[in-house]
Image (cartoon, rainbow, N blue to C red):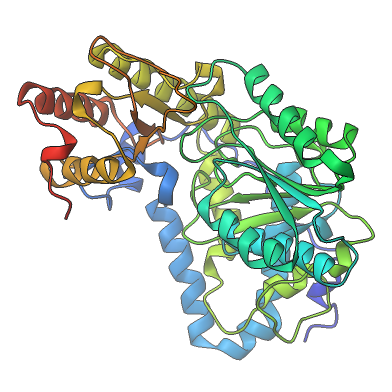
Amino acid sequence: MDSEDPRSNGDGINHVSKKPKLSSFITESEIREEFSHHSPDVARINNGSFGSCPASIIAAQKGWQLRFLRQPDDFFFNNLQSQILHSRTLIKDLINADHVDEVSIVDNATTAAAIVLQHVGWAFAEGRFHKGDAVVMLHCAFQAVKKSIEAYVTRAGGHVITVHLPFPVSSNEEIVAEFRKGLASAKANGKKVRLAIIDHITSMPCVVIPARELVKICREEGVERVFVDAAHAIGSVHVDVKEIGADFYVSNLHKWFFCPPSVAFLYCRKTPISPDLHHPVVSHEYGNGLAIESAWIGTRDYSSQLVIPQVLEFINRFEGGIEGIRKRNHDAVVEMAQMLAKAWGTNLGSPPEMCPSMAMIGLPSKLGVFCDDDALKLRTHLRDRFGVEVPIHYQVPRDGEIGSTDGDGCVTGYARISYQVYNTLDDYIRLRNAITQLLHDGVTCQMLQRE
Protein backbone atom coordinates (compact mmCIF):
# COMPACT_ATOMS: atom_id res chain seq x y z
CA MET A 1 0.00 0.00 0.00
CA ASP A 2 0.90 3.69 -0.07
CA SER A 3 3.31 4.82 2.60
CA GLU A 4 0.45 6.62 4.37
CA ASP A 5 -2.20 4.10 5.31
CA PRO A 6 -5.55 5.54 4.12
CA ARG A 7 -7.21 3.83 7.09
CA SER A 8 -5.31 6.00 9.54
CA ASN A 9 -7.83 8.86 9.25
CA GLY A 10 -4.99 11.35 9.15
CA ASP A 11 -5.64 14.98 8.48
CA GLY A 12 -3.06 15.36 5.75
CA ILE A 13 -5.53 14.93 2.88
CA ASN A 14 -7.57 17.85 1.63
CA HIS A 15 -11.07 16.36 1.80
CA VAL A 16 -13.40 19.32 1.72
CA SER A 17 -15.07 19.96 -1.61
CA LYS A 18 -15.77 23.66 -1.94
CA LYS A 19 -18.84 24.92 -3.76
CA PRO A 20 -18.01 25.62 -7.38
CA LYS A 21 -18.19 29.23 -8.47
CA LEU A 22 -21.08 29.19 -10.90
CA SER A 23 -22.12 32.00 -13.19
CA SER A 24 -25.68 30.66 -13.01
CA PHE A 25 -27.57 27.95 -11.21
CA ILE A 26 -29.03 24.85 -12.79
CA THR A 27 -31.92 25.55 -15.15
CA GLU A 28 -35.25 23.74 -15.42
CA SER A 29 -34.23 22.29 -18.79
CA GLU A 30 -30.99 20.98 -17.25
CA ILE A 31 -33.00 19.37 -14.44
CA ARG A 32 -35.23 17.70 -17.04
CA GLU A 33 -32.13 16.40 -18.81
CA GLU A 34 -30.58 15.08 -15.59
CA PHE A 35 -33.70 12.94 -15.00
CA SER A 36 -34.62 12.16 -18.58
CA HIS A 37 -34.06 8.46 -17.89
CA HIS A 38 -37.20 8.42 -15.73
CA SER A 39 -40.18 6.73 -17.36
CA PRO A 40 -42.11 9.45 -19.22
CA ASP A 41 -45.39 7.58 -18.76
CA VAL A 42 -45.45 7.65 -14.95
CA ALA A 43 -46.22 10.43 -12.48
CA ARG A 44 -43.35 9.56 -10.15
CA ILE A 45 -44.41 11.04 -6.82
CA ASN A 46 -42.83 8.40 -4.60
CA ASN A 47 -39.26 9.60 -4.27
CA GLY A 48 -39.43 8.59 -0.60
CA SER A 49 -39.19 4.85 -1.26
CA PHE A 50 -36.20 4.53 -3.55
CA GLY A 51 -34.93 8.04 -4.26
CA SER A 52 -33.62 9.28 -7.59
CA CYS A 53 -30.23 9.59 -9.21
CA PRO A 54 -29.27 12.25 -11.80
CA ALA A 55 -27.68 11.25 -15.08
CA SER A 56 -24.40 13.00 -14.22
CA ILE A 57 -24.10 10.90 -11.05
CA ILE A 58 -24.93 7.71 -12.94
CA ALA A 59 -22.08 8.59 -15.32
CA ALA A 60 -19.73 9.24 -12.39
CA GLN A 61 -20.69 5.91 -10.85
CA LYS A 62 -19.96 4.12 -14.11
CA GLY A 63 -16.54 5.79 -14.16
CA TRP A 64 -15.73 4.38 -10.71
CA GLN A 65 -16.97 0.95 -11.73
CA LEU A 66 -14.75 0.94 -14.80
CA ARG A 67 -11.71 2.06 -12.79
CA PHE A 68 -12.15 -0.97 -10.59
CA LEU A 69 -12.79 -3.38 -13.45
CA ARG A 70 -9.76 -2.17 -15.44
CA GLN A 71 -7.25 -2.96 -12.69
CA PRO A 72 -8.88 -4.24 -9.50
CA ASP A 73 -5.66 -4.74 -7.56
CA ASP A 74 -4.41 -1.22 -8.09
CA PHE A 75 -7.85 0.16 -7.26
CA PHE A 76 -8.11 -1.90 -4.07
CA PHE A 77 -4.62 -1.17 -2.74
CA ASN A 78 -4.17 2.44 -3.87
CA ASN A 79 -7.59 4.05 -4.23
CA LEU A 80 -10.58 2.47 -2.53
CA GLN A 81 -9.94 3.18 1.14
CA SER A 82 -8.69 6.73 0.64
CA GLN A 83 -11.69 7.56 -1.54
CA ILE A 84 -14.14 6.15 1.02
CA LEU A 85 -12.34 8.20 3.68
CA HIS A 86 -12.83 11.26 1.46
CA SER A 87 -16.58 10.53 1.27
CA ARG A 88 -16.78 10.01 5.03
CA THR A 89 -15.04 13.34 5.64
CA LEU A 90 -17.53 15.18 3.45
CA ILE A 91 -20.39 13.58 5.35
CA LYS A 92 -18.76 14.43 8.68
CA ASP A 93 -18.74 18.11 7.72
CA LEU A 94 -22.26 17.95 6.31
CA ILE A 95 -23.82 16.57 9.51
CA ASN A 96 -21.54 18.46 11.95
CA ALA A 97 -19.92 15.41 13.53
CA ASP A 98 -16.85 15.99 15.67
CA HIS A 99 -14.60 13.46 13.98
CA VAL A 100 -14.50 11.36 10.85
CA ASP A 101 -14.12 8.23 13.01
CA GLU A 102 -17.75 8.78 14.05
CA VAL A 103 -18.96 8.30 10.47
CA SER A 104 -19.30 4.91 8.80
CA ILE A 105 -20.68 4.31 5.33
CA VAL A 106 -23.01 1.32 5.02
CA ASP A 107 -25.46 0.05 2.43
CA ASN A 108 -28.68 1.40 3.94
CA ALA A 109 -30.55 2.19 7.15
CA THR A 110 -31.47 -1.48 7.53
CA THR A 111 -27.78 -2.39 7.78
CA ALA A 112 -27.22 0.38 10.32
CA ALA A 113 -30.12 -0.88 12.46
CA ALA A 114 -28.58 -4.35 12.39
CA ILE A 115 -25.25 -2.93 13.62
CA VAL A 116 -26.82 -1.09 16.55
CA LEU A 117 -29.27 -3.83 17.54
CA GLN A 118 -26.67 -6.57 17.19
CA HIS A 119 -24.58 -4.62 19.70
CA VAL A 120 -27.55 -4.37 22.08
CA GLY A 121 -28.36 -8.04 21.62
CA TRP A 122 -24.83 -9.02 22.59
CA ALA A 123 -25.13 -6.93 25.76
CA PHE A 124 -28.23 -8.90 26.75
CA ALA A 125 -26.72 -12.25 25.78
CA GLU A 126 -23.47 -11.57 27.69
CA GLY A 127 -25.24 -10.38 30.84
CA ARG A 128 -24.24 -6.71 30.67
CA PHE A 129 -27.94 -5.94 30.22
CA HIS A 130 -30.43 -7.85 32.37
CA LYS A 131 -33.25 -10.02 31.10
CA GLY A 132 -36.40 -7.92 30.94
CA ASP A 133 -34.61 -4.60 30.53
CA ALA A 134 -36.42 -2.57 27.92
CA VAL A 135 -36.00 -1.25 24.41
CA VAL A 136 -38.46 1.50 23.45
CA MET A 137 -39.55 2.11 19.86
CA LEU A 138 -42.31 3.96 18.01
CA HIS A 139 -45.17 1.86 16.66
CA CYS A 140 -44.54 3.20 13.15
CA ALA A 141 -40.87 2.15 13.13
CA PHE A 142 -39.74 0.75 9.80
CA GLN A 143 -40.58 -2.94 9.44
CA ALA A 144 -36.94 -3.93 8.97
CA VAL A 145 -36.08 -2.25 12.30
CA LYS A 146 -38.85 -4.19 14.01
CA LYS A 147 -37.48 -7.42 12.54
CA SER A 148 -33.96 -6.55 13.71
CA ILE A 149 -35.32 -6.01 17.22
CA GLU A 150 -36.95 -9.43 17.00
CA ALA A 151 -33.76 -11.05 15.67
CA TYR A 152 -31.27 -9.46 18.07
CA VAL A 153 -33.03 -8.09 21.16
CA THR A 154 -36.13 -10.09 22.09
CA ARG A 155 -34.32 -13.31 21.23
CA ALA A 156 -31.65 -12.37 23.79
CA GLY A 157 -34.17 -11.54 26.52
CA GLY A 158 -34.87 -7.86 25.99
CA HIS A 159 -38.36 -6.48 26.57
CA VAL A 160 -39.84 -4.19 23.90
CA ILE A 161 -42.16 -1.27 24.70
CA THR A 162 -44.00 0.22 21.73
CA VAL A 163 -45.08 3.86 21.82
CA HIS A 164 -48.24 4.46 19.78
CA LEU A 165 -48.26 7.87 18.15
CA PRO A 166 -51.45 9.64 17.06
CA PHE A 167 -52.32 10.08 13.39
CA PRO A 168 -53.58 12.37 12.04
CA VAL A 169 -51.43 14.53 14.28
CA SER A 170 -51.77 18.23 14.97
CA SER A 171 -48.69 19.13 17.04
CA ASN A 172 -45.33 18.02 18.39
CA GLU A 173 -46.81 18.17 21.88
CA GLU A 174 -49.04 15.18 21.10
CA ILE A 175 -46.00 13.13 20.14
CA VAL A 176 -44.01 14.23 23.19
CA ALA A 177 -46.88 13.33 25.53
CA GLU A 178 -47.24 9.81 24.11
CA PHE A 179 -43.48 9.28 24.21
CA ARG A 180 -43.33 10.25 27.88
CA LYS A 181 -46.10 7.72 28.61
CA GLY A 182 -44.17 5.01 26.78
CA LEU A 183 -40.98 5.71 28.73
CA ALA A 184 -42.90 5.63 32.01
CA SER A 185 -44.34 2.24 31.06
CA ALA A 186 -40.90 0.95 30.12
CA LYS A 187 -39.45 2.00 33.48
CA ALA A 188 -42.27 0.46 35.53
CA ASN A 189 -41.31 -2.11 38.18
CA GLY A 190 -37.71 -0.92 38.21
CA LYS A 191 -36.90 -1.89 34.62
CA LYS A 192 -34.02 -0.10 32.94
CA VAL A 193 -34.42 1.32 29.45
CA ARG A 194 -31.28 0.29 27.60
CA LEU A 195 -32.15 1.72 24.18
CA ALA A 196 -34.71 4.07 22.66
CA ILE A 197 -35.26 4.00 18.90
CA ILE A 198 -36.66 7.25 17.54
CA ASP A 199 -37.59 8.00 13.95
CA HIS A 200 -36.64 11.44 12.68
CA ILE A 201 -39.16 11.11 9.86
CA THR A 202 -41.64 8.25 10.06
CA SER A 203 -42.11 6.45 6.77
CA MET A 204 -45.77 5.47 6.79
CA PRO A 205 -47.58 7.54 7.83
CA CYS A 206 -45.04 10.26 7.15
CA VAL A 207 -44.48 12.82 9.93
CA VAL A 208 -41.42 14.79 11.08
CA ILE A 209 -40.76 13.73 14.67
CA PRO A 210 -39.27 16.21 17.18
CA ALA A 211 -36.19 14.02 17.49
CA ARG A 212 -34.01 16.48 19.38
CA GLU A 213 -36.69 16.95 22.06
CA LEU A 214 -37.29 13.21 22.42
CA VAL A 215 -33.55 12.57 22.75
CA LYS A 216 -33.41 15.23 25.48
CA ILE A 217 -36.26 13.49 27.32
CA CYS A 218 -34.38 10.20 27.06
CA ARG A 219 -31.32 11.78 28.70
CA GLU A 220 -33.45 13.22 31.49
CA GLU A 221 -35.11 9.84 32.09
CA GLY A 222 -31.87 7.87 32.20
CA VAL A 223 -32.23 5.99 28.92
CA GLU A 224 -28.82 4.44 28.32
CA ARG A 225 -28.54 4.80 24.53
CA VAL A 226 -30.57 6.49 21.81
CA PHE A 227 -30.69 5.46 18.16
CA VAL A 228 -32.33 7.85 15.68
CA ASP A 229 -33.52 6.13 12.52
CA ALA A 230 -33.46 8.99 10.04
CA ALA A 231 -33.68 7.03 6.79
CA HIS A 232 -35.47 9.92 5.03
CA ALA A 233 -33.65 12.81 6.70
CA ILE A 234 -30.54 13.96 4.86
CA GLY A 235 -31.64 16.23 2.01
CA SER A 236 -35.18 16.42 3.40
CA VAL A 237 -34.73 18.07 6.80
CA HIS A 238 -31.83 19.86 8.48
CA VAL A 239 -29.40 17.40 10.09
CA ASP A 240 -26.97 18.37 12.86
CA VAL A 241 -26.00 15.30 14.86
CA LYS A 242 -24.50 17.27 17.73
CA GLU A 243 -27.63 19.35 18.05
CA ILE A 244 -29.84 16.22 18.00
CA GLY A 245 -27.62 14.53 20.57
CA ALA A 246 -28.27 10.85 19.85
CA ASP A 247 -25.70 8.09 20.28
CA PHE A 248 -26.48 6.65 16.85
CA TYR A 249 -27.97 8.36 13.81
CA VAL A 250 -28.49 6.85 10.36
CA SER A 251 -29.72 8.35 7.12
CA ASN A 252 -29.87 6.94 3.61
CA LEU A 253 -28.02 8.89 0.95
CA HIS A 254 -29.97 7.33 -1.93
CA LYS A 255 -33.41 8.67 -0.89
CA TRP A 256 -33.16 12.48 -0.82
CA PHE A 257 -29.44 13.03 -1.42
CA PHE A 258 -29.28 11.87 -5.08
CA CYS A 259 -26.84 8.99 -4.58
CA PRO A 260 -27.37 5.77 -6.53
CA PRO A 261 -28.59 2.86 -4.42
CA SER A 262 -27.54 1.84 -2.03
CA VAL A 263 -25.58 3.95 0.44
CA ALA A 264 -26.16 5.41 3.92
CA PHE A 265 -24.13 6.93 6.71
CA LEU A 266 -24.18 5.73 10.30
CA TYR A 267 -23.04 8.26 12.89
CA CYS A 268 -21.85 6.72 16.17
CA ARG A 269 -20.97 9.26 18.84
CA LYS A 270 -17.54 8.51 20.31
CA THR A 271 -17.97 6.75 23.67
CA PRO A 272 -16.22 3.89 25.49
CA ILE A 273 -18.59 1.43 23.78
CA SER A 274 -17.53 2.50 20.27
CA PRO A 275 -14.93 -0.29 19.81
CA ASP A 276 -17.65 -2.88 20.48
CA LEU A 277 -19.68 -1.88 17.40
CA HIS A 278 -19.18 -4.20 14.44
CA HIS A 279 -20.50 -4.67 10.95
CA PRO A 280 -22.73 -7.78 10.73
CA VAL A 281 -20.71 -8.95 7.70
CA VAL A 282 -17.37 -10.04 9.15
CA SER A 283 -14.40 -9.64 6.84
CA HIS A 284 -10.65 -9.27 7.33
CA GLU A 285 -10.99 -5.72 8.68
CA TYR A 286 -12.85 -7.00 11.78
CA GLY A 287 -11.54 -5.29 14.90
CA ASN A 288 -10.21 -2.18 13.13
CA GLY A 289 -13.20 -0.02 14.04
CA LEU A 290 -16.69 0.08 12.57
CA ALA A 291 -15.86 2.63 9.88
CA ILE A 292 -12.98 0.53 8.53
CA GLU A 293 -14.93 -2.72 8.84
CA SER A 294 -17.79 -1.14 6.87
CA ALA A 295 -15.43 0.09 4.16
CA TRP A 296 -14.53 -3.47 3.22
CA ILE A 297 -17.07 -6.29 3.54
CA GLY A 298 -15.67 -8.34 0.69
CA THR A 299 -15.52 -7.94 -3.08
CA ARG A 300 -18.54 -5.91 -4.20
CA ASP A 301 -19.44 -2.70 -5.98
CA TYR A 302 -18.48 0.26 -3.76
CA SER A 303 -19.17 2.90 -6.39
CA SER A 304 -22.27 4.28 -4.63
CA GLN A 305 -20.03 5.25 -1.73
CA LEU A 306 -17.45 6.91 -3.98
CA VAL A 307 -19.69 9.35 -5.87
CA ILE A 308 -20.54 11.46 -2.80
CA PRO A 309 -18.14 14.27 -3.88
CA GLN A 310 -19.84 14.40 -7.30
CA VAL A 311 -23.27 14.38 -5.63
CA LEU A 312 -22.31 17.41 -3.57
CA GLU A 313 -21.20 19.16 -6.75
CA PHE A 314 -24.60 18.40 -8.28
CA ILE A 315 -26.43 19.68 -5.18
CA ASN A 316 -24.42 22.89 -5.18
CA ARG A 317 -25.66 23.66 -8.69
CA PHE A 318 -28.95 24.60 -6.99
CA GLU A 319 -29.43 27.96 -5.33
CA GLY A 320 -28.91 27.50 -1.60
CA GLY A 321 -27.36 24.05 -2.01
CA ILE A 322 -28.85 21.30 0.12
CA GLU A 323 -30.84 23.71 2.29
CA GLY A 324 -32.22 25.43 -0.79
CA ILE A 325 -33.38 22.12 -2.26
CA ARG A 326 -34.88 21.09 1.06
CA LYS A 327 -36.93 24.31 1.36
CA ARG A 328 -37.99 24.20 -2.28
CA ASN A 329 -39.23 20.62 -1.96
CA HIS A 330 -40.97 21.21 1.36
CA ASP A 331 -42.83 24.28 0.13
CA ALA A 332 -43.85 22.51 -3.09
CA VAL A 333 -45.07 19.31 -1.42
CA VAL A 334 -47.21 21.31 1.03
CA GLU A 335 -48.70 23.31 -1.86
CA MET A 336 -49.48 20.12 -3.81
CA ALA A 337 -50.91 18.41 -0.72
CA GLN A 338 -53.21 21.32 0.02
CA MET A 339 -54.38 21.36 -3.59
CA LEU A 340 -55.23 17.64 -3.42
CA ALA A 341 -56.94 17.89 -0.04
CA LYS A 342 -59.11 20.75 -1.29
CA ALA A 343 -60.05 18.81 -4.45
CA TRP A 344 -61.00 15.70 -2.45
CA GLY A 345 -62.64 17.45 0.48
CA THR A 346 -60.17 16.02 3.00
CA ASN A 347 -57.22 17.21 5.11
CA LEU A 348 -53.49 16.75 5.50
CA GLY A 349 -52.37 14.15 8.02
CA SER A 350 -50.17 16.67 9.81
CA PRO A 351 -49.57 20.45 9.84
CA PRO A 352 -47.26 21.77 7.09
CA GLU A 353 -44.41 22.29 9.56
CA MET A 354 -44.48 18.54 10.34
CA CYS A 355 -44.12 17.61 6.67
CA PRO A 356 -40.63 16.98 5.24
CA SER A 357 -40.42 16.58 1.45
CA MET A 358 -43.41 14.24 1.76
CA ALA A 359 -47.00 14.78 2.88
CA MET A 360 -50.00 12.63 3.80
CA ILE A 361 -53.35 13.54 2.26
CA GLY A 362 -56.63 11.94 3.27
CA LEU A 363 -58.39 10.04 0.49
CA PRO A 364 -62.15 10.35 0.07
CA SER A 365 -63.90 7.86 2.35
CA LYS A 366 -66.08 6.68 -0.54
CA LEU A 367 -63.06 4.80 -1.94
CA GLY A 368 -63.39 2.38 0.98
CA VAL A 369 -59.80 1.83 2.12
CA PHE A 370 -60.63 -0.57 4.96
CA CYS A 371 -57.45 -2.63 5.29
CA ASP A 372 -53.83 -2.87 4.14
CA ASP A 373 -54.88 -5.07 1.22
CA ASP A 374 -57.28 -2.37 0.01
CA ALA A 375 -54.44 0.16 0.15
CA LEU A 376 -52.20 -2.10 -1.93
CA LYS A 377 -54.94 -2.76 -4.48
CA LEU A 378 -55.57 0.96 -4.89
CA ARG A 379 -51.87 1.69 -5.26
CA THR A 380 -51.55 -1.02 -7.93
CA HIS A 381 -54.62 0.27 -9.77
CA LEU A 382 -53.29 3.83 -9.81
CA ARG A 383 -50.02 2.57 -11.27
CA ASP A 384 -51.51 0.23 -13.88
CA ARG A 385 -54.54 2.24 -14.96
CA PHE A 386 -53.46 5.85 -14.51
CA GLY A 387 -49.63 5.80 -14.54
CA VAL A 388 -49.37 7.25 -11.02
CA GLU A 389 -46.86 5.85 -8.53
CA VAL A 390 -47.85 6.81 -4.99
CA PRO A 391 -47.94 4.80 -1.72
CA ILE A 392 -51.32 4.39 -0.01
CA HIS A 393 -51.62 4.09 3.76
CA TYR A 394 -54.44 2.47 5.71
CA GLN A 395 -54.92 4.13 9.08
CA VAL A 396 -56.33 1.78 11.68
CA PRO A 397 -58.86 3.54 13.94
CA ARG A 398 -57.70 3.26 17.56
CA ASP A 399 -59.77 2.58 20.65
CA GLY A 400 -63.07 3.40 19.03
CA GLU A 401 -61.88 6.82 17.83
CA ILE A 402 -63.47 8.14 14.67
CA GLY A 403 -60.43 10.08 13.54
CA SER A 404 -60.57 12.35 10.52
CA THR A 405 -63.80 12.54 8.51
CA ASP A 406 -65.01 14.00 5.25
CA GLY A 407 -68.62 14.60 4.23
CA ASP A 408 -69.27 10.90 3.67
CA GLY A 409 -67.58 9.09 6.54
CA CYS A 410 -64.33 8.25 8.33
CA VAL A 411 -61.11 8.82 6.39
CA THR A 412 -59.01 5.66 6.71
CA GLY A 413 -56.93 5.94 3.54
CA TYR A 414 -54.07 8.37 2.91
CA ALA A 415 -51.84 9.05 -0.08
CA ARG A 416 -48.20 9.79 0.69
CA ILE A 417 -46.85 12.17 -1.93
CA SER A 418 -43.20 13.13 -2.38
CA TYR A 419 -41.73 16.17 -4.08
CA GLN A 420 -38.24 16.13 -5.57
CA VAL A 421 -36.62 18.60 -7.95
CA TYR A 422 -37.72 16.68 -11.06
CA ASN A 423 -41.44 16.78 -10.19
CA THR A 424 -43.93 19.11 -11.91
CA LEU A 425 -47.49 20.21 -11.26
CA ASP A 426 -48.73 17.77 -13.90
CA ASP A 427 -47.67 14.81 -11.72
CA TYR A 428 -50.07 15.83 -8.97
CA ILE A 429 -52.84 16.85 -11.37
CA ARG A 430 -52.69 13.31 -12.71
CA LEU A 431 -53.17 11.88 -9.21
CA ARG A 432 -55.98 14.34 -8.47
CA ASN A 433 -57.79 13.45 -11.67
CA ALA A 434 -57.31 9.70 -11.17
CA ILE A 435 -59.01 9.77 -7.77
CA THR A 436 -61.75 12.04 -9.12
CA GLN A 437 -62.34 9.60 -11.98
CA LEU A 438 -62.62 6.64 -9.60
CA LEU A 439 -65.18 8.53 -7.53
CA HIS A 440 -67.12 9.51 -10.66
CA ASP A 441 -67.22 5.87 -11.76
CA GLY A 442 -68.31 4.69 -8.32
CA VAL A 443 -65.21 2.51 -7.93
CA THR A 444 -64.29 1.25 -4.46
CA CYS A 445 -61.27 -0.75 -3.30
CA GLN A 446 -63.46 -3.82 -2.84
CA MET A 447 -64.15 -3.77 -6.60
CA LEU A 448 -60.45 -3.80 -7.53
CA GLN A 449 -58.58 -7.00 -8.28
CA ARG A 450 -55.22 -7.41 -6.61
CA GLU A 451 -52.58 -8.33 -9.18
